[in-house]
Image (cartoon, rainbow, N blue to C red):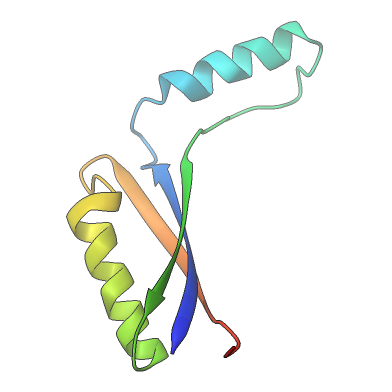
Amino acid sequence: MRFSVIVHVMPRMGILDPQGKATEAGLHQLGFDRIEKVRIGKQIQFELEAESEQEATEKTEGACKKLLANLIMESYTFEIQALPKG
């Protein structure tokens, strides 16, 4: 089976996010002063081949832990969806 995966990686709470702070300051300068606690992360999309959704989940967890997220400073979540055959 083929799966579509979207991984969301964000800085852990309590970790300084300079890009988020700079973006928040820019928003305030543009008059969006009620926007607060801006955090900037990344989204990673890929497709993978696996025998089951469980295997796809395990492969995605492995990829996140080994490469896609820095577990000291970042947390991650992901969504997996089976792709139609064809």
